Image (cartoon, rainbow, N blue to C red):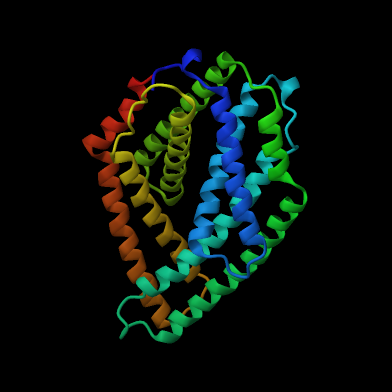
Length: 294
């Protein structure tokens, strides 16, 4: 990606089309969530992704309008962010339940009662989360958030190409700057919070890049292949961090202490591998490439 997006390479109508498609996918996911007792994990994953893509596309279009022309539904980003948070919380509990079975350690050392106890806690939390998500999904469907957003994207006059090009450039530059800063802070101290911040920044940048391929004419620079690998590894660590947090809520017992120590060992080894990867020359080159694109 060059330092700036050229106006002649931008297609405002393509961005509006992407908003309509993302809104339609999101509406389908919300309907499935609002009226099902237990939505499938894959459906929740798709809904989380669709909400993220819709927020990025809507934010770009809203940014490209002059303030007086931003006549879309009120509080769109706040409402979409709340839905995404609820979906993410349910997803985290579901993944935690799967990890309980996958990382329970030696069956001889970890009693089945401890596994069942943690699984019940995660299932109970996920059940509460699904109730909240169903209520929020029904509310936004009844308030016609996605319908109004789709209508606005289809009927509002498109922004000028120069304004949209400027919005795209600002968005990409802002994400690159945020990603580099989080990466450099993680190099200084690879805490759980800092590593998770790198993962979120990588995910947001990939979402924007995917959108750019639809609205900018001509080839775009390919993403350094080390970045998706890094994002996946960071996601694995995040899941283990969540599981460790849930273990800490259980009543202390020799079995739980033993399980916690085993899990800490896995997290420590994965964190060490991640730190070596962050320090590797090829990863440093990938992040340095973000500077060279400017």
